[in-house]
Image (cartoon, rainbow, N blue to C red; front, top):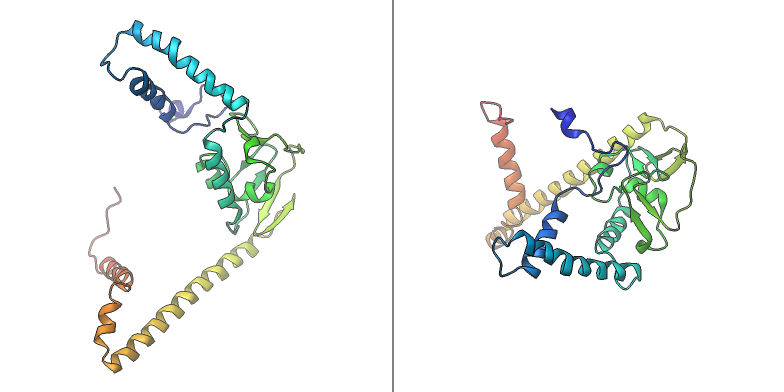
Length: 241
């Protein structure tokens, strides 16, 4: 069943749209803009509205895009997402190819625009985000000013270093992750120990008003403690369905 469900109609293409929102928007425009006073209109009236009013409207909008009088709305979201990924730190390595615009990380497959921090930081800032194009075949994303390189040029990204054709030692990456984890826990311990020291000092002063004032600030810590204690004291395993 799943094999048939996941089989694409065109094997060498992948749809760039993730939902049926475009089709729903198409019928919403017809219903609200052209047929607001009709409930279940006749099919001949519907066809007449599509041919005489909807299609000319889309043709006019398409000409605006061609003449650059307007820009496609999704390009603003693409630009915002691209700039956000430029500042994300890279901790792991994946096989990345900007020529075919593919990456083996999960974020690439889940992203709306088929971009991830590895592709973004490897390619660099484009000259103009309005020159970006999407398509169903490789490369999924391309720019008008994109330089072509060999398709066999597989790029490996590890941390902030970009190296071509060289596999980094996985042990070094695991050590980096461990050091990063230890750093995070050290910060947590420093914060909590410092907070506990302040609370004990205020308790010796009998500062009841201060204790009431910070109660809301410590509510998150209290909830975390309660949830962990409840989990540890349970008698049965939690359900997974």
